Structures are given as C-alpha cells and as structure tokens.
Image (tube, rainbow, N blue to C red; front, side, top):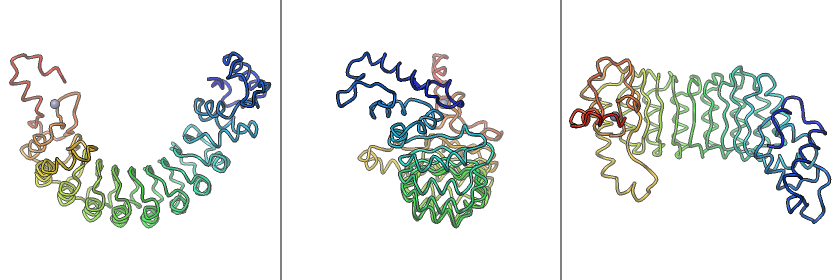
Length: 376
Ligand SMILES: [Zn+2]
C-alpha cells in the first residue's frame, strides 16, 4: 500500500508523505478521487479526505499506523476514529511506554493484542487501556507476568464489553481479582487461563459460572488447583460451553466429566490429557450423553446454531481407561477419529488403547475396494 514497509522504524518523513500523496493523486487519475468533497482540488497530503485516510489506516501495518497517527491533526483524528484492531506484540522492549502514549488516542479499539515473549507490560499501561478504550472486546495479555491484580481491577471497571480475554501464563494474578473481573465482564465467551495457577481456583470458577453464562470456550490447562467443585460449577453455570481444556488438571475425577456430559449439551472439544483420575465411568457418561442429546435434537434444529457432539477429545496419559469404554465414546461420536490425518481422538502414549478405532477403519476392512480408506 501507499505507506510502504520501508518507512517503518525510521519514522515517516515529510518527503515520504509528499511522495505518497503524489502517488494517490496519480492513481486517483484526477477524477472524483482527486478532488475534495467540497469541490476543491487536493494540493497537499494533509487534504486527504477522511474517508481515504480511514481506508489507508485499514490497510497499513500497525507500526505505520502509529507513525501516521503522529503526523498531523487530520491523520491523528483518522487513526483515532478508524483504528479498531491493534497488535503491539512486535515491540520487544518498549510496549509499556508505547501503550501509555497510544491508549488515550486509540479510543475506538476493539481488538488489542499485547502478547509478550519477555514480560514487559506493567499495571499503569493496562490502567491507561481501561481508562480510554471502553469498546474493547478482545484482549490478549498472554505471558504478562509483571501485571498484578490491579490490572484486572482496572479492566473490570473500564472494559465491560470484553468477550474474549487471554491471560494465559500470567502467574501473578490471584483468584479474588479474577472473580471480581468476571462480575463486571459478563459478556465473556472465550477465556484462556492456561497456566494461571493462582488465579484459576475453584473459587474463581464458581464466580465465572455465576457471572459468565455465555461462556463458550475455556482453557484451564495446567491449572493444578482446579478440582471437581470448580468444574461442576462451570457445568451448571455455563450451558453453552463448547470447548473446555482441562489438560493437566490433576485433581479432577469422573465427577467433573459426568457433570459436563450431563449439563453441557453443546460440548465439542474436551481436553483431559494427564487427568490420571479419570476412569471408564467418565467415558461411558460421555458416550451416553450422545443419546440424551439426540433426544433434544429437535430443540437444537430449531436453534439451528449448534452442530452436536464431540469433535475432539484428548485422553492421552489417562492410564486407567480401558479400550471398551473408549471405543464406546468413539462409536457415539462419529466425528472422533483415530485414523492418521484426522486424529481427533487423541490417545497418544496410551499403548493399552491401540485397539480403539474410528468407524473409517472398520469400513476400510469391509470395503471390497482396498483404496476406500485412502479417503483419509
Ligand atoms: Zn477415521
């Protein structure tokens, strides 16, 4: 696009802008596009119509947008009005200062990605976001290890429209602050708490279940403090749950899976990797939930929104499971596959489960044409 990548990092100079402007006029052909709305001919890049500025903003990369926002009042206004998505993950050392200066300008942000490799964000920058970006819907703070509970309290007050929040790997947040946030951000649909060991406790899960009934996707991977109490609360409070990752939640037992199988009729993906307490009882409750959900089929047809049944199940390292119980799950959910390429029933590392097979395998054996199985 007009503001090329070559200008990134070295700042946008006046000559560059003149060049951009000339190009625009050339491409506009001097027709309607080359004229201002009021009928006057554009003579300077500062005269670019707002509409065109907004279009430029939507096409250039985030670094260029930031540079452009500092050029002149017109450009700043265009960026402020037009910028809804921003990613600062490329900033390796100055993300905090950048955010402090940008948040007051970019007040229309809806999607903000602040994922870090080396933790650099601090509470003051998140406070700035909460103070100015009230339309924020999607926030990625993964690996922000320097942030404290103060950030969650700020977001609770400033960003009530969040539907997607990723705080995976944020190990300094506590469960009281997370519970507090959910009491304000009640529209959350996607929440990633992977590795948030101190925050993702049963207490926090109870609050999520109570406040966030719209929740569809929750990642609790390696949240070792989570027990059946928390998962059962979720099963009762979040009936729209479609994906739940409990990998490495070593305390949970069959009770959690039974509650999910009974209450969450739209569950599509379940991660139980390393949940060593899970037994065949959990598998049979999942297999039987299929029968129940078929009974409710008409309801779901009416809603027409939901496809039904598990499409992904990870039971690797669940060493207590027997082949017959896992086969029952596989038989109940035709979208679960063990065949190469599809592999949506993940049993890697379970040598005792190698006899479990998806329907494709049996069909292939029965088929006269030996090539039938190559469909996968
Ligand atoms: Zn298959």
